[in-house]
Image 1 (cartoon, rainbow, N blue to C red):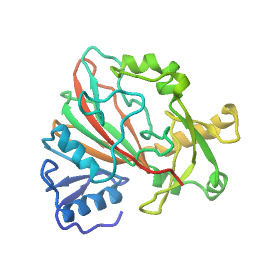
Image 2 (cartoon, rainbow, N blue to C red):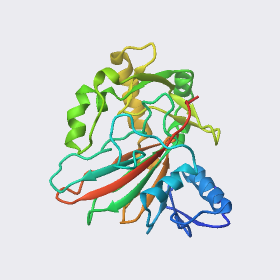
Image 3 (cartoon, rainbow, N blue to C red):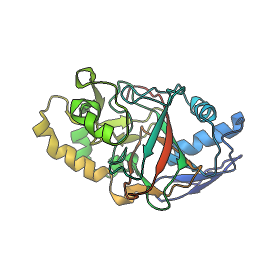
Image 4 (spheres, rainbow, N blue to C red):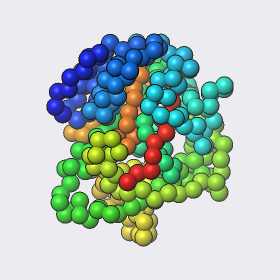
Length: 284
């Protein structure tokens, strides 16, 4: 990535593939248009951006999200009391499973998947609980010309059936999430396997093991070998960054060109996060 000029913030990359920490921004204050533009540009440049030592109320958290678009109310997981746009993600010391513990892109099971997610750390364990992100532009750009041609025009079926339908309901409850829909209510949508980012114009892979079921026109059995290759390819270590959470830290990532993975390596300790999700548009 080339160096960018930002007027109101300092932007410090944390890895070669993606990710940068932002200094000089207080998200609890009213951001000027100039500072918002800088943050927005850093978000597009680095795909996931991080802020430390923030002190956000639920209203300020939502206010920051609304600068980028309307806010999502999760169709399957109940939101915070009085703030349905905020998802509380809590793992208690006795819990064994965690939420988000596998590579995925948030909300790709929607007809119009999420633009981005804004995760705020309220309580963090003394160690562990890091999150990984993977750059899906690089995942696409490093494919061979032959594979790019194979994927051109191909669409895949995305659905939340496995995570939030009947088969996934009990697992989500074991993660402390209150699921409120049944398998019969879980739809499926078709999205391109290679997505063009609506703001940058760059192409990236757009499949993930949590919500991608098969290719359109293919059976699940036929789809699995190629999907498995893409899943393994798009999360290779050179495409990733890793963030160590601290209390008051906030991460804002672009679901249109990243995947992420929440590590579950802090058993016996508590972790509490709050997430706001910004609505997006239909992939093309």
